[in-house]
Amino acid sequence: MCLPSLYAENKRKPPLTSIIAGSSCAMTSDDVAKKTLDGIKAGSFFITCNSMGQLLSIATAGMSPQRSLPMALIEVLFIGVTRLIALFVQWDWYKSIHQWRAANRQ
Image 1 (cartoon, helix red, strand yellow):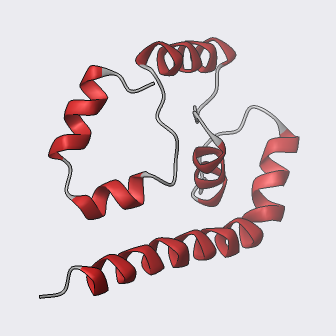
Image 2 (cartoon, rainbow, N blue to C red):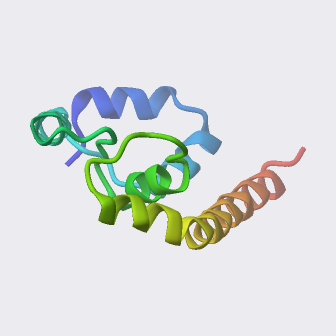
């Protein structure tokens, strides 16, 4: 289901941006608001809406405060793995950009 505002946004978006943004799903504003409020109520420093956001928050946590020792340990132990996954995601985006440029080269 495509919301009218999302449809209008997608019409104005450059084609290349649409290709890259297509790697994640769109959410309704109600879903985002619910996740945000739940995160605030839980006292979370990072509030993510999908797995890509969770991966990004772990990979870029730096010195952000953590509510629990297990989450802090996960960030420290898996930073290398998340950076490797991020490289593969970026590589996939780069392939999409390269294919688009090859198809639209003038």
